[in-house]
Amino acid sequence: MEEDKKLNWKIPWRGVGVAFGSGLLALYLVFRKVAPPGEILDELRVYPLSYFFVALGFVLAAWIVDGQRIGMLVRAMGRRISWWQLAVVLGAANFLSLVTPFAGGGGVLVVYFLYRSGFSAPAATAVVLAGGMAGQLSLVLLSVVLFTLVRNVPTDLAQVFLYVRIFGTVYIGAVIGLMFLIVKSDRFFEWVFKKRSKKSRSAQWLTEFRRAYTVLVTRRRAHLAACIFVALSYYGIYYLGGFTLLSGFSVYHPVLRYAVSVMFGLAPVFSPIPGGAGLSEGMAYLVLDALPDDALATFIVLWRTVVFYIPILLGGGIFAMLAFRWALRSPGTSPDSVILSETEDHNR
Image (tube, rainbow, N blue to C red; front, side, top):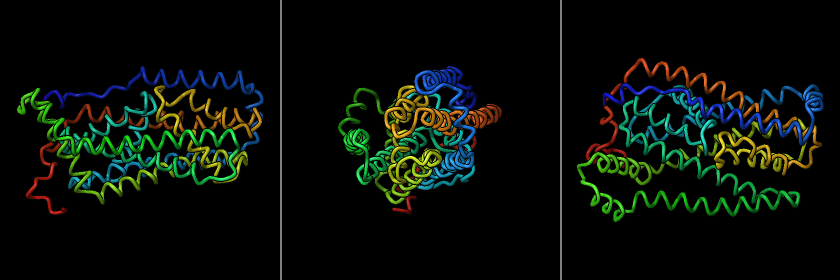
């Protein structure tokens, strides 16, 4: 416990450097291969700035909504955390997601925040893992449904949508299968306990994690469904940012325009490169052939600024503030008070 109290969060400068370096390299390739800086600046002068600020507003508003994805599962565990606290922490978590491979760093910060709020480490991990799976399911489900329903799609883009639908269907099955295995794989966990004593720390941690996860997935289905709905709302709002920026160029019809903006958003989530730098720009280069080169390069610069550079600066500031405050304060309530006991569970 003393080690936990002394834990200090440090800004991951290496990840920040890789993220910014990859992003700058991608922009350099945009300037060199797509359009020269002079043409991009000329295009920016005539681009309506109102679209830029509205797009940024959607991205920041999505943080507030995303906080409630975790908030729903926190309530399922019998606790409440204010919406603004969750929004602030998710803003900082978004920063870590942008500077770590596969957007994986943000979840660790949320686990630590829940621990400081009174959850045990296994319960906090169960909440974040269940919330993460809900987010992944909602994102892929949104993509599969949207790419299936959209009409009047150019041939080359329709081929990309087909591949995403196939991958998405397989991915949904894999996530649901993993959820099922965690809850139902008694033989596997019995084998683990045979290898390690049930009194070992790892065995106790795993038992408590599985117990909390089972509560969330099987006994709090309404909360889990609400979590998936909130996650779907988060992505729906977040991708309105790219949609709004594309609207400034009047490219494609509205539904296809939104589908294309979802395509750009998928790349960072499944990319080993922090922030999906390079992959997202390459995706834009491949699918936005309806835009002239100077307009395409301008969109890439605007889009990367709205979803990457500004959020990383704002989220980094929030993260630094939280790290400073947490370094001065030890975790609060006892973590053992969060897991609901069998006799005190009144919500079954």
